[in-house]
Length: 566
Image (cartoon, one colour):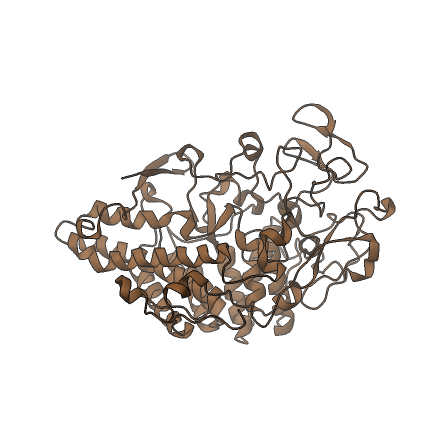
């Protein structure tokens, strides 16, 4: 039986403690001979802590869903991304894998819940109840992903024979959602608020409540979203959550044990649990610069007066990083700054740059004046990227699943949509915003504090806040879907810098102030040839708000119907 060992370490101010989780796939032995003692029960649960069951990710800094949004672009274009190309079909490999991984986890949970009583004679009842809580939380999370992406899906809560599996039908998502809430509530009631330091990074009461809040938000169940998120906010003592003092440090290895992180997946190079980040790294730093922020994303950050760039007198389109929300330079590399040992400058005439790593000027492979495949938009990701990624070509930062800032903004959104805008909404929004500026929420003159209680204005502010706070964390795509903005945002072209020969140097890096509509969606059409259309997105509102049921599933079970227009 193959064994995967992950070392989990908690580093405190003066002490440290480590525990090894032995993750042995429980599918290796037969079900009939498994689940007979505490060790086997724990192995079954631990196997579902793998990243593939939580975030389908190429890099720990963001799930693959960020590539479906208007925040991020991958150089492969239509061939690698049928969602933004409008060509998504029931044979798509990514959506098929997503669907199947969810049901793999669900099947293992069902098997566990039907068989864990075999260990009752040698395992404390409290331990079995806690492990059941972990498993039911995992099942709820899988189903929450399925209904948010596919709508109605088969609700399966027991193991099935092959003949039974071939006759299931889709269940109304509202019925599935009720089952999800029951599992989340069971988990919240039976999981501890915290564990001993030798058992960090396990599922807790707070994780159950936070993920329930997200599931409710995606379903438009504002009352449950408010109640669950408030319950997380009201936790006290060990196992409670606070915002990390530094936004940028949160996503570094130094932030892996932050009390802002409600749940993350442990990754470690020595245990061979890591990704290769070369698509994110700049070309000077040994990468490809193939995964890049969009101009739309950069334009979404407010100025330091709290106004969008098209309304603020502080905005300078010749110097787009000046006077902006600090999260911009924490998320995207500022032009002319040292990054991973090299000055980052995509200007077409900057053919050499200074390398602090080498102590001399070197060829600038991050400008398309030298390398035609340097970042097409001119922007590269900074958030979560570390020097070690360039040195070792390894990204083993823990993969964040959910953090406290999301809970605060979920609470604020739920209250806004319920028509309950009050001081607690302002506090939740301002706590997130103040942290971005590195100040306390009470220092209202040191950051653009939100003061309005107008619901329409708060809704606009909340949506902008979610976009910039969670950039490259994989949440933007589902926000566009649930807000029904995908049909607008994902039909706009992706804008790049003009080719070097066509670049008007007097208009570098951009020719003017980008018009933004009431939803913060950018419009570059007035700039003509001063911008380059890199890729034209397509989104069919008649079908793409749901993903297609994979055709392999429908071939195996004719009772499973397809989503409309696929």
